[in-house]
Image 1 (tube, rainbow, N blue to C red):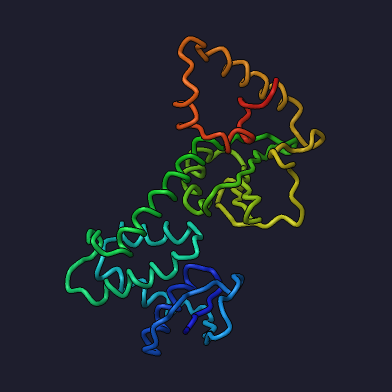
Image 2 (cartoon, rainbow, N blue to C red; image 1 turned 180 degrees about the vertical axis):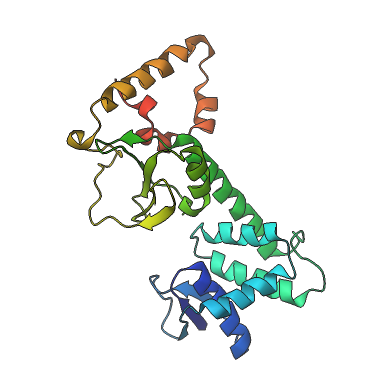
Length: 255
């Protein structure tokens, strides 16, 4: 078994694809270095991320498929599912071998499976845009905690930069231990030495803005008053707002 090891970044994966073609040695698996390696009878090839090589693969794909198709490859990569790296390699292999675009060739397993993964990632990013709830701190920072199924922070960054352009905000993914910070000019990726929110995403009371608890109670009151008990449909409600998101929603906290 020939296994290529990479650093877990998208550029790293593109570098692996370049190395596979350069070495003319097809992989049995493509594995992030942090993952557990399968079996004893394996040959591993560590690949160091090279932006120039990654760019050549990315540009090469752009000559064969649309910008939307390339974007979908990146979104599928953000799923962090272990099979995705091999699927993207197989997709690239099929792309470079075909005289026509393969992006609608759903008879190919890699095309069909990546499309399904892409839909899951898109759905999760859309829910994050809808379900994120900020808390205002005493120094006028709007803070939110998330634990999405997939690594969707890169996908929601532009949405929040445009929507809250006049506010400083920080959205922190506690599952992946990094966040996005907007300083009124640009969005930067940051890592906190110590996570400041509890398991439900609540900040300590001593760092919250003085009126924050009042605003939270007002929002809860509004939510409960617009709710019509006679029209209650829990099954439909859970379909649109799954239970796993509730602990981060202000309106779902006990009053």
